[in-house]
Image (cartoon, rainbow, N blue to C red; front, side, top):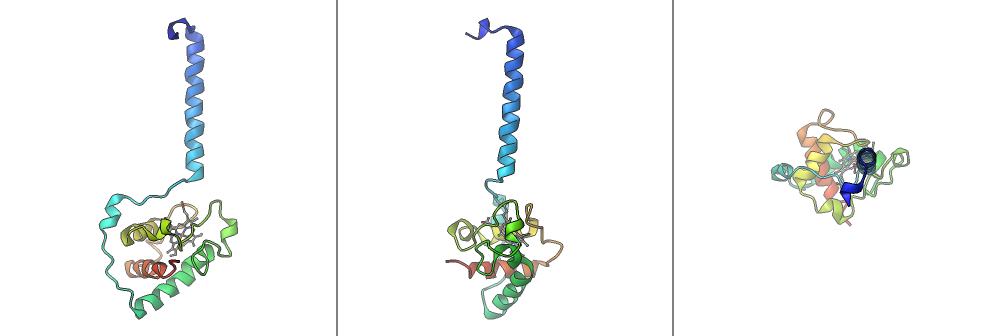
Length: 139
Ligand code: HEC
């Protein structure tokens, strides 16, 4: 069948398929389907335990830096959430809670638009404290 397609038409087909691929690619990026931490992040060990001091400190970090988007209970319904292009997720759910501490640490450090990166704003201990606090938001 292919041999009967005229070369000029084949060129058009090629262009069309390129355009389609590009459109699908950008749709995928726009949707930001899944945000996966690299596998190497899992091996980073949480140096903290969920003792009272860590939880208090973690809550402080969370209220100051995260709650505006993620909401008081981590449901992604903070006051700034409505201005975001994409939902801020729901920390009470398994989709977040099933990730390793290292993966969550990596995500808070790196960020992904519209979520800011925190590796310059917070120190390592503060990021770990926020991860420990996030665990208390589990449903
Ligand atoms: C400006 C709003 C905003 C702020 C502030 C913010 N986030 Fe986010 N966060 C988001 C958005 C939006 C996503 C979803 C990103 C995506 O899926 O690409 C997200 C995703 C996450 C995820 C990934 C959840 C998952 O299920 O994979 C974690 C973890 C996270 N945020 C933690 C935090 C912590 C901890 C802080 C504070 C230190 C914080 N965020 C501050 C907007 C924000």
